[in-house]
Length: 242
Image 1 (cartoon, rainbow, N blue to C red):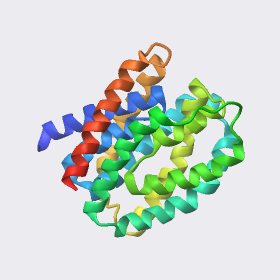
Image 2 (image 1 turned 45 degrees about the horizontal axis):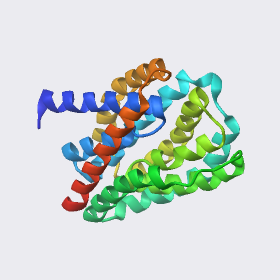
Image 3 (image 1 turned 30 degrees about the horizontal axis):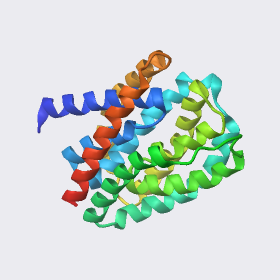
C-alpha cells in the first residue's frame, strides 16, 4: 500500500474514527490504530496516533467548550501527567511482539468490558478521576488509547452530550501532550511521525465537526455493533501476528 491510495485509506479511516469519537466519546482510536499499524508498524503507529488524537480531541474540546467540567479535567490531570510519562518511557523499551499482543488483548478486552462492566448508581466522586487518569494514561501510553475503558467513568459522574464529549476530550488532550513529551525524549517520536499525524489532522477536525452535528440523530446501536466487530477482528489478528 503506497502513495495516494495509502493516504486515501488513512484519511478515510481518520474521518470515520473522529466522527465516531465525536458522537460516542470513544472508539475512534481503536478504529484508527489498526490502520496505522498495518501501514507503519506498531512502534510508529502509537506516536502517530497520539499526534492525530491530540488534534481530534482538541477540536472536540473547542466544539463543546461551553459545557466543560473543569474540576473533572483538573483531577484527571493530577494522575495522568506522571503516569503518562512513565508509560511513555516504558513504551520505548517494550519488545514489539509484546506490544502487538498487548494491543490485540486490549482490543478484545474493550469489547468484553463494554458488556460486563458493573452498573453504578449515584454520582461518581470527582476526586476519583486522579486514579482514573493515572491508570488510563499509563495504559494509553503503551497501547495508544483507553477511551472505551475510561469513558464509562465520565458518564457515571453524570456528564452527558456536549459536557461528556468535551470533558473527556480535554482530559485526553492532557494525557496525549504528556505522552508526546515522553515519546520525544526517548526518541520514539520522530519529525516524520509528527508530519504524518498533522497530515491526518484536517480529517480529524472534520470528523469532530460532523459528529457534533449528528450527535442527537445517530443510530447508536448500529455504530456500536460495527465498532465491536472491528475490535474483535483486529484484536484476534494482532494476537496471531504477535
